[in-house]
Image 1 (cartoon, rainbow, N blue to C red):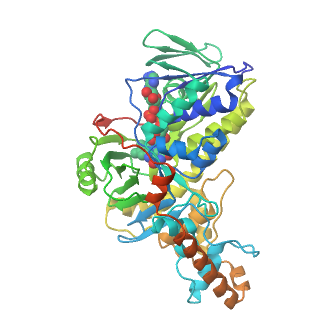
Image 2: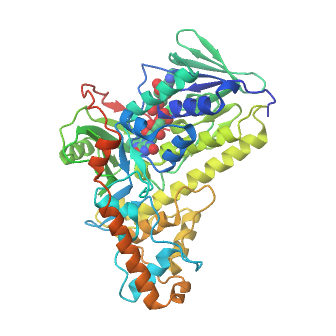
Image 3: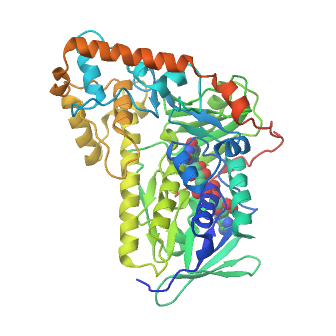
Length: 511
Ligand SMILES: Cc1cc2nc3c(=O)[nH]c(=O)nc-3n(C[C@H](O)[C@H](O)[C@H](O)COP(=O)(O)OP(=O)(O)OC[C@H]3O[C@@H](n4cnc5c(N)ncnc54)[C@H](O)[C@@H]3O)c2cc1C
């Protein structure tokens, strides 16, 4: 496509995606490239995106970020999983935990087959007793180990987090330019982006442009005309009302996702406040009703005005086109039920660094990047559709549609395998593990007809003993952990923020 070597990179946008990208580029390749980040003080960031997954920690480790310093700066709490309420049936509750459930014996079948076999024989207890993260979450405990180190992610304050990253990136060499982009100029022959022009008249040239302008997708979507693939036929939620409130409970180490008749509500506990949101399908509920419901259901006093966000689930047909890569919301969005957006941008930046186009944006590099992006997105899409589809709820048109909708073939195949004999798998480049699929399927009452016969290979008394020992070990470990609030106070206390800010009433954006 182009043999133009890449020396100067522009990151357009200074939300979470922009600063994550700029920080990662400068930390990994600072001396090799020049990085300029352009952001507009007039255009606010989306202001949500506060629940993460464990790859966030891995990404920070790669960047050499100290956990306690980051947690204090970002008001962070620990996340050991997600609590789902009212999903299978109204009144149901389960946790999708981040850790391993049970263990893998030398037989080539996953733990849940042995557990299903035990349950069929009348013993085996509950699945949550076999997972440290699940049990610690229920007990509101946490320890950063060793010897006890649960797999974890975080709840973060989005604005504090971007400030924290900016504090790392600018001293390391990222040049920040404040200004509103008014035009993106393309080279007449190649169609590559040559320069972005700001309202001030300033012109910024670069060899590679990273579009982090949010749902507007100014560069990839608008200037290069890369289309948006809409997945709204499967994931019909398309709006959210968000509000922040003072904490009135000790922070729990998990996100709550509480289903309602037209979507679900989130609760994200930080050290001094909670993030709350009401995700809904605009065909099934009005904006006013969603806002009224959210405000009635939050526990603490609101510290900002509620704001409305419109969104579409889907992705850009190409994540990388010519000399432009779209990251964060500019590249795509899957509704936030499993908190996967920040993961997707971090995974993409990591791949971009691994395959950095020092010698130009060649077809081979671009195709490889786009193929992997699509796999990552589609696997997550299927996992989210699963939550909506596997339900016995019949109390609204919304849930009746979810239960009966036509599924993508990829998910149909997975479900057929599960229903037959509880087979679950993790694809290459897939975020969610077998344990994730199993915990959601079992948590939402998708009982398989059978299970792997290898589970019958273990003598019954041995299985009883092994399971009992595992449950006891986990209970003992959890008992030895400090409470999550005590852990936060000792490890990463955050100052109480100034709650005097407010937000515009609506951020009307879409893909
Ligand atoms: C309802 C909802 C809930 C979510 N919850 C989660 C979650 O729990 N976990 C998770 O991982 N993700 C979540 N997300 C996604 C998450 O919010 C985003 O991935 C994350 O905030 C990154 O956003 P961004 O940086 O791509 O875009 P934005 O935050 O929108 O930032 C865009 C940037 O571009 C700049 N910009 C735009 N236009 C111009 C212009 N013309 N000139 C100059 N600059 C410009 C803006 O100033 C801003 O700095 C959620 C999203 C939604 C909609």
